[in-house]
Image (cartoon, rainbow, N blue to C red; front, side, top):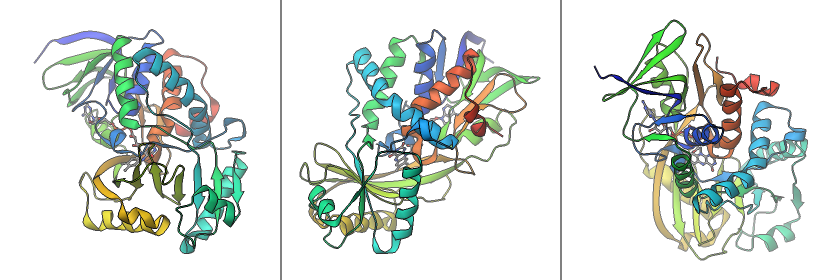
Length: 369
Ligand SMILES: Cc1cc2nc3c(=O)[nH]c(=O)nc-3n(C[C@H](O)[C@H](O)[C@H](O)COP(=O)(O)OP(=O)(O)OC[C@H]3O[C@@H](n4cnc5c(N)ncnc54)[C@H](O)[C@@H]3O)c2cc1C
């Protein structure tokens, strides 16, 4: 058995967008942090995502999810600027705007989604058919209904992860890739040691941000939870720049245009455990969806496709906070389809918990059970 490594104040397990955001937020508040990542940093769901950032408005938000989204919405420009000035990396964040449309079979879901935006007093404009087609000239001529969400944004998630990683390194975070957590030593309600194959680590606080693997990690501490992986498949096409400028959404499926002419088509929801691969049916369905919206995409160059494992927690809300029955173990996981958009405010909630700063009452709903 190896000797315990010198202690950090906090160990974060998992180096995706959630773990790295937490590490950076803590480090810039003078907390000494170590991140243990089983593979390479930011190569799982956080890399696989489309980087779409729906808007929010914390002032009118009524649910914990809306507060988390609204708080993050306000933080994205600030985080982008701070990361850029610290690392020189442009994460590609911009408010490209989004257009929500409906296909013949999906009118009801459009109405339900619009009602949510309106209740939150998020900027939203109904688009008359003519205006819709002026805004998105490549749209299929038979699509007649749409709403503009001018504040919807996007980020180039691989670049954002690179910026976070560099910001963590320059803020003194001890970053350990290739370091899977395989066991814990508990003494009473405390985690006294975190075990990896080569070294043991100790810290005052341990935060599990293991994405889809959070359940497995917590099981090693003797804790049963119900996190599960939900696979998402996604396609990348290359077409001409400005074919579309807005994110186009129909329910849970969407097109995200990058400024360089690439278009992401997302995404499936497959409950197949930890099987991270694409399927012919999944990819064909996404391409068919894209062609129904923007027929010209049928001529785009197919660049690549991939799949990622989203962390899902039953109930649909992320779990953020202290694990019941423990005094120094916390979790930040289960962000499902929204981990990129919700990452800044998640980091703020964890920072408040770790530093004993006044919490936000609304976040009680997110506490792990
Ligand atoms: C196709 C697709 C599209 C998406 N689109 C969007 C989008 O547009 N907008 C949005 O906001 N969200 C989107 N998401 C969701 C988003 O990607 C996730 O919610 C988010 O990445 C979760 O971040 P995470 O850090 O919790 O998980 P991950 O990024 O998966 O990170 C968890 C990390 O923990 C590590 N780990 C696991 N076990 C151990 C262990 N034992 N020891 C050490 N490390 C361990 C893993 O290797 C991994 O790096 C999308 C997801 C997919 C798959």
